[in-house]
Image 1 (cartoon, helix red, strand yellow):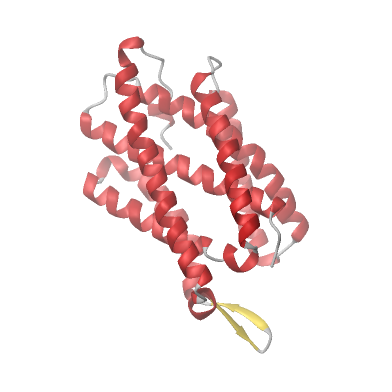
Image 2: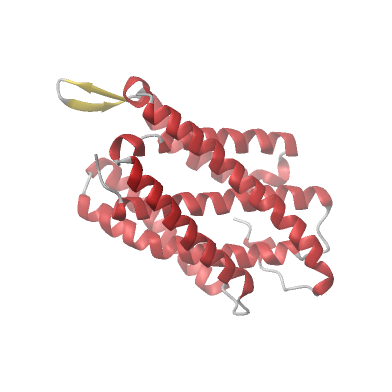
Length: 242
């Protein structure tokens, strides 16, 4: 990802104002993505469009449509493309892809509104926000270098991702439960790690204005991805199914 840029040493106090401005942009992008995805997920999930466009029930069997597979897997490829190719893309194109990613994730998340009751979704969201905020704050203020922990957690994240894809076809409740427990640990830890790396970026006076803008978008995207994955992991553990 962006480890070559993230692994920087801290700069002095003169960089604090610059860092604050950077984090305003990071969180603006993160909350913008959450707003877009949440609005689309709620609208698409509660208006019955999931059964109309994504899932068909024929002769008592559930049959996913092509749109279901697109919104399930396209965000993965798009998210990786944004993170790895951001240097080659213009800022307007990055913004367009960022918005498209948020829309696709909203469509993907719409299925939770037919699987879980609204009360448990809201409760889990606030639990996620509390845990995410606490770990983000810890990652920002800690003096301990979290690089080794982050590398380990990213390896676990890849393992979770592969296991989730396999279980997508096998539908094992036990595997899903284990993935969710491990996911809570991995995504909370990665939140602290990414916040520390973003802090180093925000305080780096050597970054140009355009590069700083692009990295604030990437930072917002990464925090958004961690928040959503933590939310889904907790929802599988705490949510009340319909």
